[in-house]
Amino acid sequence: MNIRSLCAIAAATTSLASIGSSQAAIVYSGALNVAVPVGTGLRVWIDLDTFATSTTGSFTGWDVSLTGTTANFLTVNSQSLSNNLFVGIAGTPVTINRLAPGFVIGSTGPYGTIGGGTMGSSFNMGTFLPNSENIVGFRRDIGGGQFRYGWLSVTLGNDFLTRSLTGIAFEDSGGSIVAGAIPAPGAVALLGLGGALSGRRQRRMR
Image (tube, rainbow, N blue to C red; front, side, top):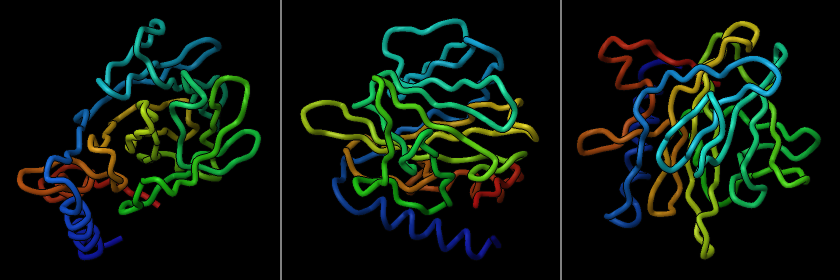
């Protein structure tokens, strides 16, 4: 994707962000570099509200965790089946979609789940790109019939055994959010676009 196309997406993102409540805001974790450990029983626990993480054990308030013991496979587990769902495809296991920049994460989903008290979903080589940053979208049920929509990004190595949580964001008014959207002075930017113009590495997203 060339810079002209990315700029067009960024402009559309800004337009989308201007619709709705003037109090709406994107809450962004900032750039993260939290390694996802490899091995049985090892994982990173994540609080989607505060962006707190832990690799030493679960903690009060965690929402989802990332884990995986074999190459080409990473599992996302939710603390509650009903609270945290990801944009994906239903099945066993549920497959989480890798989102293109500009994808609108909102009420239409689709959100896939499986039973058993947790929501299990998998990254796999058919959906996610090795040696790249991958963005997924989520929906959070915060009670009272209200939802928050957001995204998180995971950078994967060649065999998925090198992987890091690199960012989280959500829209705090309950409105939709564009995949990769982050707050910027007076506007909204796409993850990686402003950085590319200032010398940061461009992130390729399918």
